[in-house]
Length: 420
Image 1: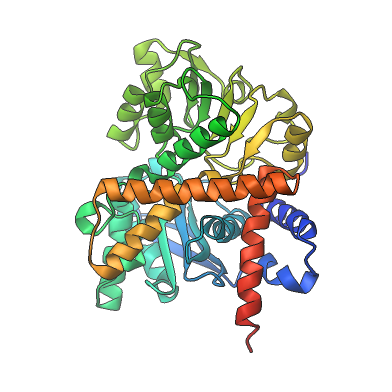
Image 2 (image 1 turned 90 degrees about the vertical axis):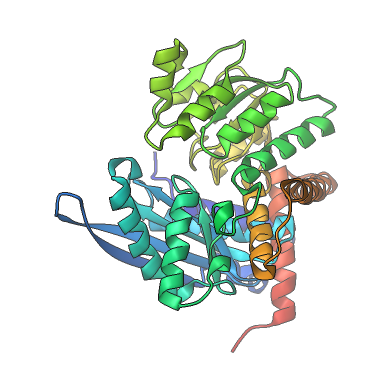
């Protein structure tokens, strides 16, 4: 099997959507190339006194819609192609939900579980210093992503403040509330996945109650989505993290599992499963288990041409970025499996990051109820826009989402013109 290239996968879908919109090449050519692609080397003194050099990236895809916006992930498999694709998906995601941002993304090639807290802080501050010339409230606003959280964002904003000698709260989102973060931000991506799952079921004339759901990933996206969907009455029968998956056809205690995993960065699902006698399964088994809805909420390239034919869910709601390859998408569509795409389904995080940024710039903060209400309004409107467009044009929801986003970005770019 050919090596998966995330950016090539993004380009393939972009070309398809541009064709459906009957765009000329000159209309959308700017979306095929990131505006800036920064690669940095980060020498870090480890606790044992040795120097280890880590590789980091910050890609700024398009500023047509506004300042660059996107998370920073810490993962051993981070590479340039992945970060470029993630930055592009952020451009489309922001356009789909109608917030004034362009797309950016960052990452460091590291397994954070192997580092002490001191090593992790030194690495974070070194990365923040390296990207600081291109970051700021009106330039580029990073946020948490895979294996990063509010504490890591705190180290970043403190570093930016020290370097730039001024208030930099608006340079980072996903911060702790005490440091200018927004109420509801931690839960926002998972809550958005819940809203979108609820809405697609409603469109199909179904209720959330007793629907069987399998969720790959138990971080802030999958973990929170599992808890919120369980509260609505859904039967969460399988979940996983990087250590293993667990399965119970009668439903899992997802709130207890999530609470355990959040107690410590190094807590793993396998440990909880063994302590509590849960049925352990392989990740591949979770993806193909007998369920109504599958929510891949981990990494990209999880549903591919090798396993798409074995997916049993009738609906896939993409909580992760790029979990389904273009080739798998075609297989799922041919099999009549409805896919709600990432650039719609997981847009709750960037939407709430936008709310946090607005509050930072105004120095005026909203209640959690206000945040969640605004988030629901944005997500439901975006869902309705994409669903209606896909039905009108007889295309998949992924194509409908891309057509929505690309149509907006091309229109803005034509109005702005080309400089110089």
